Length: 362
Image 1 (cartoon, rainbow, N blue to C red):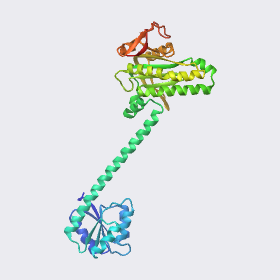
Image 2 (cartoon, rainbow, N blue to C red):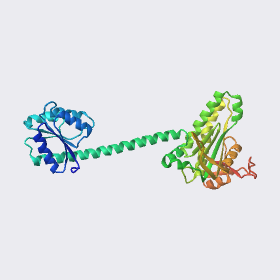
Image 3 (cartoon, helix red, strand yellow):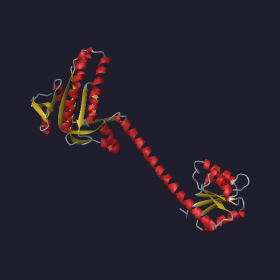
Image 4 (cartoon, rainbow, N blue to C red):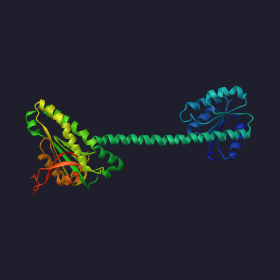
C-alpha cells in the first residue's frame, strides 16, 4: 500500500509544506497539500487521502478543529491523522487525543520518526480497509441470503417445500418437464357429496379447513410433494423433485397415519351429524412431472396413468381403507401386511386391476 498511498500535508507555512512533501515524495508516496484547514476539508470531501499530516497552529480552523471535523464525517472517521506541532507535546497530547488524533510529531521534524509513524499508520489503514471490504462482502452475502429466504417464503405459498427448495437451488430448470418413477397417493372423503348437498357453505368450508389441517402436516413430515387440494380430494406424490429410497413405503406410512389421525376427527364430525370417512389409494409408476399453467399462476404436476390409477383405487376404498396397486404391493411386501381385494373393475381401465388392502406395517 505504501507505494501508492496518498498523504495530505496541511500547514500554513510554505517551507514546512515543501519540506514534508519533498521527504514523502522521495519515499514514493503521493502527496497533496493544503495551506489551511478549510482547504484541507474541501480536499478531503473530494478525494480522501490515506493519511493526513496536520499542523496544529493555523489561522482560522486549527489542527484540532480540522481533526474533530474529520472524525465527525463517517467517510473519514477512521482516517489516520498525525498532528504536527512546535508546542510542548506533553501539553498538546491531551488536546490532540480529545480531538481524535492518532499520533503526534514534534517540530523540527525528525525524518526517521516521520517515516516510522507514517508507515505504521498506513499499515493500520490497510487493515481497516481490508476489514471494511470483508464487511461489505459479508453484508452483500447477508442481503442475498435474506432475499433468497424471501423468495423461498413466497414460493412456499404456492409450491410444496421440496419444490420451492429445488427452485431456489437450481432455478427454473427444476420445473422443466421430466420423466420419473413416482408413488402417487390420493385421499378423498366418503359421503362428502351428500354432505355438501345438505350442509351450509360455512359448514363445508369449516370441515375442509379441519381436513386440510390434518393432511397438510402429514405431507410435510413424510416428505411428500403436495400436488393439489381440490375440495375433499388430495393428491400427493413421492420421489420428486427430491428422490427418496423407499417412496412407496413413505406413501403407505403416511396413508396409515392419516387414517389413524382421522379417526378422532371423524368421530367429532359424527357428533355434529356429519357422516364422513377417509379413503386412500396408492399407485406406483412412471409419470411426467413439471410446471403447468401460465405466467402468473403455475402449478407443479405429475401426469400419467399412475395418477389415474391412484385416483381410481382411492374411489374404490371404503372409509378407513388404504388400497394399493400390484406394483406398490411388490415394493412394500416385506414392510406391510397386505390383503388382496381384486381384481377390480376401474373406470378408464380396459382390464380388471389387481388391488390390495393395507392392513398395517409389519
